Figure 1 (tube, rainbow, N blue to C red):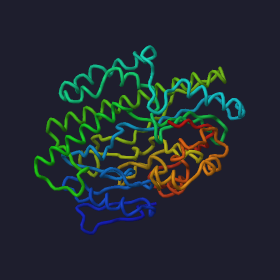
Figure 2 (tube, one colour):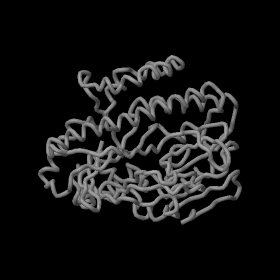
Figure 3 (cartoon, helix red, strand yellow):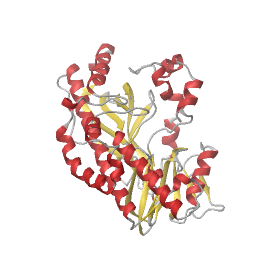
Figure 4 (cartoon, rainbow, N blue to C red):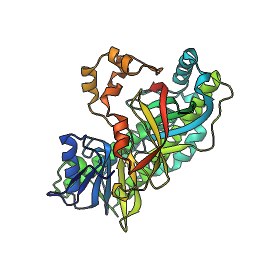
Length: 398
């Protein structure tokens, strides 16, 4: 179906919103973006849209001659990975799943955890060393915050918040591995550094913006090029991070089911990034913040909240969405609000049938803190088409 809401009054470009479930803060953030001189054609908001830092999460912004670092966000290259296995649901009872949960958490560092130096994945880190040194030479002040020990020790780690590892079953009871994580601490450091630099540049120009977090770099400037290099580095690192975690999850599965294997097709969906694409006859910069690319026939991953369904989709190449679709369910309340509104008993009830942590530590990830994923999927029938429905049976949260 087409966009549910189209806003035009007083804006430089229209806003197309694929949902009616949107709060006023998100609308104001979208309007702020749509008033910028360098924004191209229109702004697209996905069905999972919600307020972010300056720009909404769940939006696609096309720009000419400029990029907004805060619109990309602080977890550059964050995204999803999914792959089917040769396993069936019937092969695992509750004890097997409990063992698997423990084995995954033993092998994959969670939260702020990282590998001990002797366990660092040196071979996976090697391709990233020289490009990172180039970035650090251009920006020496990053040097003190990015140590080789930290970024290398974090490759293959999950992080915290809404990052997860899941085992899910499709309608044929085939088990899939799904995981969600990004560029970890090093990506956050790069993003925060360049967001601050963009604000400094705008302040030096005495430029008035509707929100300081919409500070931008102008194409052709040294900082613009350096930022794009940093985004590309962090995006590649994030994908390698997901591959490294996948390897550890497979090892964990093989302790329970030794014959575990996967096919050759691994689906990867970045949802925080900026890249050059051609739309409406022009080469423009596309920022997807909490949105995935959905070109015609392109596979993508849209996860639901912990305990809900998730989806493998096929893009439909909708031009008015800049060939994009949503990246998940989208939050309806902050983490603090969720912790104040619900109890551990609520969490237990809402994650029934899923082997996972059910304590106060993950209460902010309770399913009720998110939009209904089925409503999100319904609202974007012209953006992507469901290929596989998945139901989580095990979830590891960061």
